[in-house]
Length: 408
Image (cartoon, rainbow, N blue to C red; front, side, top):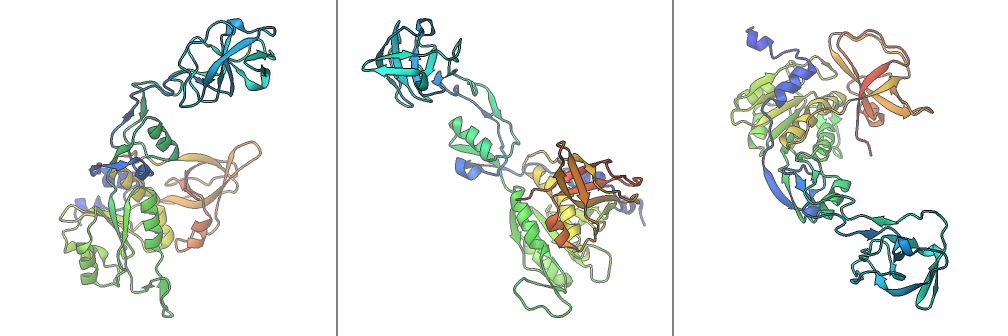
């Protein structure tokens, strides 16, 4: 076996991810209407071209006056009204008051808004009580949120509901965003039947492509579920050849058994492997390569937990890179609620659940059964606990690294 071949096997998680990301760049840019930008990645920064608010605005319903005139004995002459979208266009002079509402422009000359609860109106005059000295000015300054020229959102930011609001407040009706990577997902195996079919005694329902498609959509890609294929070299090759995609994700057939045919099938399409196996548990058979036409292929194991763990470790960062977002995993920490044994020669990612204790600390409990076929365990997990290669036993209360899972 050649030295090059050896370098493809048993790679660390970090090294394998590095090879997958080595030439992964943003695929392209498109412009979308603001409501369609949710979940998309910005391809250009958003810079404010006006102040927000563009005027000093009242923070309360009340009366705009000059602070220097305020006293319990002063009777103010009412000269007008300022409402949101309908400013009072004249200045406020000595002894004058303008009825004002929240969000309305503060007239020039006024530097105080007295809340309406502290006002007593009598016809065309108004008097005020003073319950705080000095009273709060209740005025939001022009540019209090942001000013013209401020950088509001950086290139690579993923648009969520809050960032969408910020873009809208800056007046953006359209946004330049990264093109969504098109991801074709192919499950393989003689044992698979689609949900709703009648399985034979030796068959199971295919589930991997459904969860992976949902993750691809959530992570900024466009998922296309291909029809599952039996363990047939030609059928697998033809399905992949016909797939119009930037990235192909296969599920199953990733190991070295007589029925693991995905890599041999794709050899006919010019597959060049960059990763053959990874020192990770679960998911050692995970692989990655390029087809002759440049399309990327990520091969995931058929066991659902293995596929989903490795999707978090490799597919998610790869999709981030292809949209110009940060591919770094969002690792945090927690305290173990139970001891764990020493790890072996593979990095172990354990399905676990988090809780916050009375002192506000994150407590994490790995599930006792980490068998890679158990999707039920994954459905109850909200994080993955990382156990490094060759780690000694961990005691209750030890700090461990964890990767949060997005759960509804």
